[in-house]
Image (cartoon, rainbow, N blue to C red; front, side):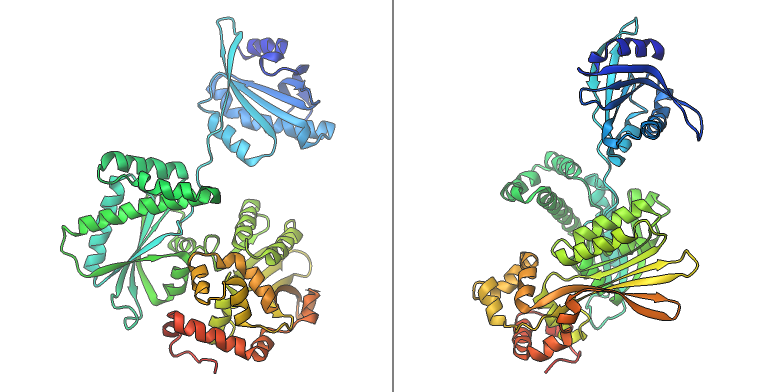
Amino acid sequence: MEDKIRDQLAANLAFIERGLELIEKEYMLENFYGTKGFIDILAKDSYNRFVIIELKRSNQASRQAIHEIMKYVGLLKRKFKVKESEIRVIIISTHWDELIIPFSELLSQTSYFIEGYQIEIDDNYNPISKTKVAPIANPAQRKFSLFHYCFYCEDKKTVNALTEIIKKATKSIGFENYILIHMETVKRNKYPNPFALYFVPMCYTKEQYREILSNISRNDEDYHIIEEFEEYIENDKYNGIDSEVYYLEQALYTYINKKIYEEEKNLTLGYFFLESGSPEALTGSIKDWSILEILRFGFLKEDIRLEDKQIILETMGLSGGNSLLFHDICATKFKAKFKEIRGSVKDFLKFNDTWQNDIKNILDAHENSDALISLYIYNPNNILEALYTSIYTEGKTLPCFEIIVDFMGGDVPYTLIYIGEIRWNGKKASLKDIVNKHFYNNKVNILMAMTIHSIESLNPLIMQDLGLEFVTNSIKIEGNKKSIYKSTPALSRTKDMFDFYNENYKFIMDLKEFFDTTTTYPLYFDGVAKLE
């Protein structure tokens, strides 16, 4: 049957696309590494590109199609030394049930120009109509939301009761994927409620959020949640798709919390209160808590491969999602993971062009090496806040990074360590000048910019006015020898941050006075040595 359909198509290639010219049916490709390949129809298009046309009629044949197509592409490239841009692939089938998933995955993983068509045939196997096949959208990869919710409870009984309430509330609206962490503080003098229930949802797609919210609106006449948030989405539409997802997430979690409090009124619970959380907040406070149990729901429960430690690290956003800290490790041979790290680092450093470019160059340099790469990047995008907190932390909250590249192959293993830091070019710093130039002559606007997160985009300009620069250096360790591997020119013409603090004493004192009197930092750093 396939032969008859193939012959009909080969005789009338215009049915597929105008401008196609037949090269040969059943075109044979030699294979020195295995069995020969036979392309159903090899043609060329109006741009003189090879067009591989592969016909699959039965579901059984469909399952083999992707393997065969990639084999033909590889053999064609080897035979004619053609560029990838000179090859097209067209898959034609009467049945796509078994083919649509591998077809969609192939399109997402390759840059080849690949199309699919579903055809109908008459009793004589003549193609009579065709429909272009749209690939299925890739499923969202596992990613925890940046919105966390912590219920501080006076006893375990309240934690358990709230757990059941959340399970009931989420099940009623079809929200399945999330975790609940039961915790007990190890610092009872710091937290009035010693137990906590930490709720972390998984990220959904925009379409999934809308579907859930639409169902809520249909089933709850008093809560037209989509309509209430549409105005925010419309006003913020020029900020791109992320802002829409942001508001949809907020709408959903607002409703879930509403259902929790409605249900809580019907029960006798101990005292509890709710605080919003984030990956950054969890990272900063996790040391104060002992994890008693992690409850998983949805696909997280089914994935037995996931360990609790990995879930906690992902919840903290250390490999993507945390705006302050990035930490990950990867062997270069794992290409998919390496690519993932590239994308995460680029997003993490979106307000730091210097280090984004430096780290890209580091990863480029070692991508094809046999090495293990560990990355630790601390990049607060508010240099004023970082300079202030560093007064109490002896510089530990200043931007920095360390990338360790271990080369274990070869006769003599060695290690490269790349170090990122900020340095001072000698320009005198003035808080008054910074406020006048960037915050409309009002210090309070610093806090406003921090609240609405506009401080991040101002940060590079503020650093420039303070005379601060991001620099990258590296050392090589081979055996017992340590040597400078590469040194940035900025190192020789700049001073370290110890000099900045010593020579800009008034600026530091003005900065300290501002944050001491307008934030709760003094409570957080209570008992820590202060700069006087």
